[in-house]
Length: 523
Image (cartoon, rainbow, N blue to C red):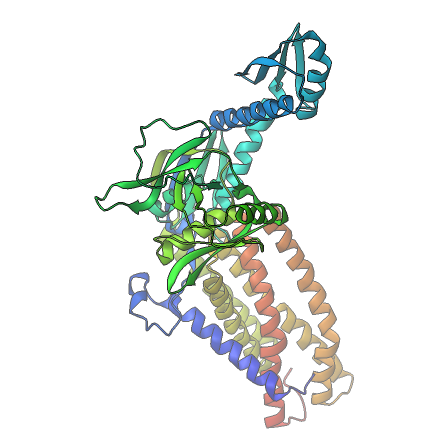
């Protein structure tokens, strides 16, 4: 353990230098960050809602619209199922509050109708009154559907706003159809743009008549008039496309989307799952040289002409995108379509509930904790304790660098995690130094004692830190809000303390041993 290769020394020094570089923007006032040269890091630690303030939005989910859309899909499924039979004649297929109803013309078709309806809604209630069949959800099923829709909306909102999972995002259910969203330091307008789009994408064939249309004109059944999102004619009027209602490929089959650049212009690339890739390939094969509309939230964002079959399941969405709008669209598609339209009914800017006083108190606690640990280490281990203090300072710098690099959010519990890390960071050094003492008392030479101390304490150090890391991981997985903030800083602190204790302190000890070659260790 006293033999450290040159490449390891270079690596340790490089990591320490990189940590100092990444952490340095945090000593600059936020309003002066832009003055930092472009070739230097500029990322600062994000402060949580309790320290920095942020956006507070109360959102209403129009769950009834989502339920109605589901009933319309059920109605279409019943129609398709009955039409597959050449003998079943029916009328009066329509919606009721919690299901669909249909009337069979002939009594002899009752059994076959019951069988087909049962195949569609095997968990739904199927009732019959003479020739009238009713397929409906129970009240319990409706409650479960409402709850699932709201939970799905909350999950997708979390993916949109915090795709990396490092912000102190708070999403809470309020009543039957409302969501409370709090995001620290967020731009309210950008937040509303992300929330306001359902991001329901679909691919449709375009009627050959693609010139500017009057949106009020009547169109033949099976088609619809949709406005282009960013196209206009020579007179500056929006372009409308006559699009077939049938969905050739649904956005539900998308598995990935990324903002990229093609021929110097921002575009959005996408990739389908195997089912979507097969449908997309079959559609493009049958409709070469025909326009194909990409529809997002009932607006045509692109209508390219199919030049050749696209069989790989990959495609490009081009349009009048900026780099920012392309990235935003890719994020929306990647996180998935909201199952329900959302409306913001209350918007507030939240001031820091704790703010500067808490930050100052956290700094004071950290400084006093660092001083107390430093005094103890100096008194207990002398010169070796001073080396541990230097490693501890590097540990704090690496924590700040990691939080800045990951753009993780620092909350008051996160500050508590850092303060806890200060105490835990010297555990590994204490274990090593005590082991070195024992080996020296047993008669070993200084070099042999140091080598044995690090070798034999290594397993204990790994076990202690690994068990704490598992606890931090579980807190992050199952916790929320402040608990996650505490878990993030604790986990980062454990990793950096292992590095500072096993690499930085050991490098200083070994360097001192080689230079001084003492007869006895000052322990």
